[in-house]
Length: 266
Image (cartoon, rainbow, N blue to C red):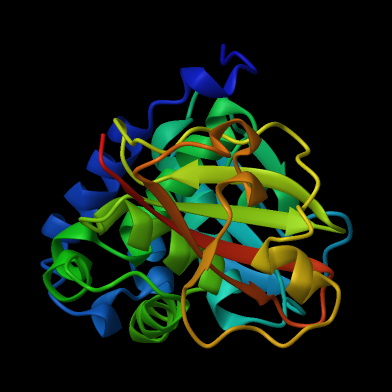
């Protein structure tokens, strides 16, 4: 049985399994990642239909399965991630999921149960293979323009592209997802990052770009230096620690996606 402790998630295993599929199907370009074809070859049929209260679900019966994804998900990248997420459950959680419904928070969040975190890690690696994306994006200067380019190249959501970018970037970066003026979850790109964590349900600081965008100001066209305390109050007077931020509103939702780039002497 799976624990509800997010720290029990085996993201390394999830990424390795997804990478194994990339190798098995000899995928060398983003347009070769055809989720319906891959799923069918894994004995899983993908269908779209009306769903209430969930983005997608997986039904498993023996060695065959069905993924049903909500047909009115407006963004193609988000719909693809939902399918890849359910395929992650199929590949990783055969003893746990005979019927698995996944909400928007399950699929779009990155600090839920271990099973959901693993399915997200699998989906991220399947849709944006590190071995491919690193070639073009690892050395790129952090910015949301780069994230948008990654999103477009691999036909994924901005959120998925941002999380993958900080993982492959050689710089020390962080992604924060906020809703209604509150930071809901965050991810650091490096295991041994110099970036401290953010308190759970951290209210957006008035001097953060995220707060400005949430309050209606136009998004900055580039990364902007912000006070350390905008995100890390305890680092207010820390020397040799610089925080750069760029934030964007996601569609018409009260949600903000933030990219932080920290330059530290330590």
